[in-house]
Image 1 (cartoon, rainbow, N blue to C red):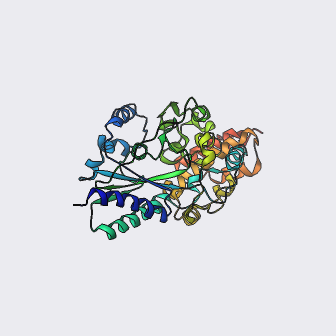
Image 2 (image 1 turned 120 degrees about the vertical axis):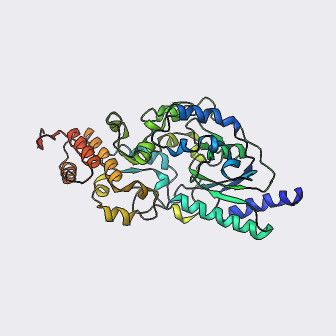
Image 3 (image 1 turned 90 degrees about the vertical axis):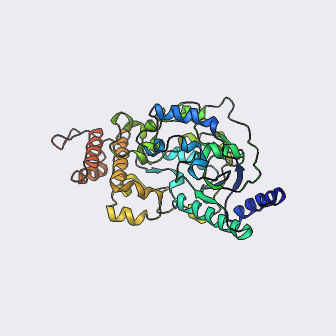
Length: 370
């Protein structure tokens, strides 16, 4: 049995050790998420999780950490910042400007470096090992977006921040450009106090959503979210939503770019989140030209790789089709799209045909109207 005094000391040690591992903040919460169950149930019943069947597979276990890992009494919540260290101070304005460049391929900021799942889980495992070295064996499991855990609700309860109207966690000192992870443990550590909400009357994130996926404060319909459509959607993207996606080919940062709190976003202190393969400046045609071996090689260690080459081409085809708004019938775009008409994937071919139609190409005959 560890004394209350030693547990209090251990909590402070854990926070210090975590910071030494590159974690920006660590807080401790209990496991009671009863207040979140009604909202989770209603969201699932309304089908707003779309094809993410794993969101419903475990029922209310997602809101009951002690059922997920028996014996759990506390959650050590962790935050790691991911904004690439090289971004300029006006990075939000530059990101929004890039969305207006017809042939730019916009990849969500979080996905331009290494896969955060492995990065954050690895550091949390190192932290757990450090705790074990100090006190001996204890019960725990490490998570980072890898199990039915309500990460935002737990982080909010731990005092790490508050849930913004876009449903992401916000922090007064760091905005929302960070990842969350947890250690579920049987150690009865002292808990931290929650903080208040600081969105006030602001609704910039709701107004900025290109597809209207934020259907109300704290309510996200994933079926309309560009991040969902370009990452989680397994088949074709609904045709009525394609024009709204613009040139966003993997994820979407719009609600974060307009959030006033992200003027405080912190740069990453770990090298893993530095931009790789020019994903902050690559063009649609450049990425569309990657064959499957190139896709797998170039995106090894990236979160993007998990969607597969066909979905990657699907997303890029949508972007190339939308480029017709300002560059209709651009010869290089039309030629690149035509080169993919023989792709073995029905999904890819259908999106390519749609894109060609946006450029005025009659896809029944392959003859251009232009």
